[in-house]
Image 1 (cartoon, rainbow, N blue to C red):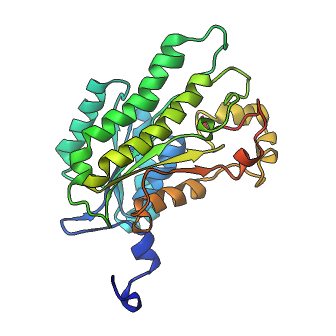
Image 2 (spheres, rainbow, N blue to C red):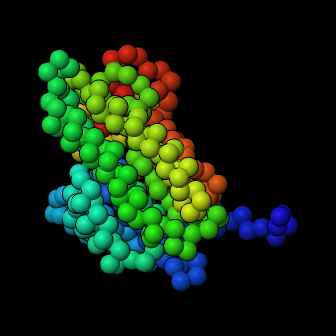
Image 3 (cartoon, rainbow, N blue to C red):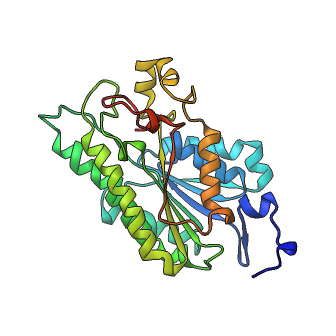
Length: 294
């Protein structure tokens, strides 16, 4: 054990994104990085010096996001950057095509954020099978599995038990609580189930990949502003914040701080965990209430 008097416990060492050896600049991949939570995380990583690849089916969206991130003075000052790529992550072949594009560009990936996902609301007794179940589970569960396993080589390259490869899955508090995640009252059972499946997949992959020095954790957000929650924010207005125990919804700083923690030395001994960031909304959950990040 190192002498406690000589350990560097500075903020930058514990929470910074400095790499080591041949990989001094950390490389991150953030799916669904063009809007909402994905963009929040991509921005945080780039502003702290990482080279970040963001991906979406809509190239125009991620290209605009990358331009915005690259123009930020903090990104410029830190030496970070953001690259936009187009990707469809709904089946194995398409996921592997995207992974191969990353492999062409990078020998090492330090951080993978599986954020791409979708929600669906429908009549409970007449549910849309193709979109509400098949497509939703393909993107929310199958996609993260195949992308993580496809990039294992990049994630374990140069990894150690104090600087492991990081996988961060974006779940939802809907994985914990029943009730609709749709403010219009449409049923969202498959969405809730898909996020619960992602939580358990996080634990399973954490167990499977620990020997390769790769940690796998998940973030379960409550209500955060995003393209998918925009309708709920518009429908509920000020009631969105009033209904939250902390009197507000999540912000970019809240999400960025948690993502940076899970990407840093400070969390190197944490794996298989699902961390809720909801301002306490799950503590006061009432059945049927609108509680989830979509």
